[in-house]
Image (cartoon, rainbow, N blue to C red):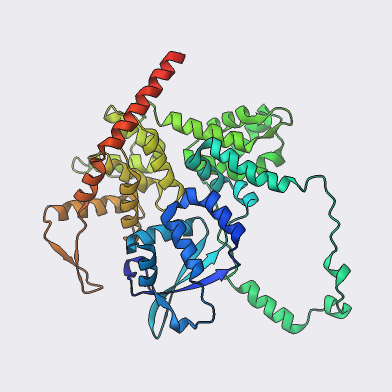
Length: 453
């Protein structure tokens, strides 16, 4: 069993590509239209290059090293890992580590993109795409792929079935041959053909029974229709921190009154607009009560309050609260940046809140490149809780006081240079042009709203 992890990935690490299906021109078109806005150009290039590196007749002992990929992509280790993780998050590849006599290596199992129908009916994927490209482009792409399937409406399927064309022995149909049964079990027990899926975990803090009861009392929506949209409703709750009562109101506002059915697209759009409006609140968000299980002293009171806020506040509310404390406002760009990182589910929301607090201590706005840099570092160093995040930040701050001090890794026997976070911070903080442009756009929007009012 290999104990390999991304911290050990070097240009000399071997890799092997294992395809699941065939990547054709139609898949490439779907990848460009629907996935490129989500994964970005680097991950887009990594995915296509890995398909090009699928071996023909080579043996696994003749595998290549990652240096080949890095050279062709003109990409460093960290950029490659970040891009590969985006592909993993969207179910395009799965990564496995393995060891043999030649050492540890990685196996990249490649999956073709989802069909347009599956993509647009997947709550998480469709919401993520809508936020990345906007309503106009989203509608254009949806119409493009829907109309191609619309041709088959009102047609009659006259295709022949298998047994209408081919004949099999009746005994074999009733009693499968032992060889067929044996190999079938092998494939059923294999995990190689299980396509990765993006699913919403069970939401323990969402009272689904309350929503069911109130929807049944207030609207004519059937129970079956509500269950059909259950995943969408839970997704919106997770992404935007929407309460049960608010969710009931949103469903009521977007229900198709002609057929008394939930309109999924309208519900997504309204939830997104509500999120954008909510992040620009000017009033201070109420502080959650301190958890009685947390022992608070004068020494650790600020840290305990921060941890409690991080654990009990949705990222959008946390960001708005942080800005309100500084008499600032949430810009569209930084709200989208936080939403993008949250959608990838790389780090828990409570950990993202700590990141937001840390960045805004020295920068007026959030910037996605810096957030991805910190996220990648925390992911690789096992940061899973807000306490872990604070400890990681304290370690960096202590090292920054002694910039020439090097740290010794007992596991590898190597001396490692500590990351200079101050340089990463200043690079983001100096991006004044982008900040001024965002402020100017927000001022113009305020003037337009005031005129309408």
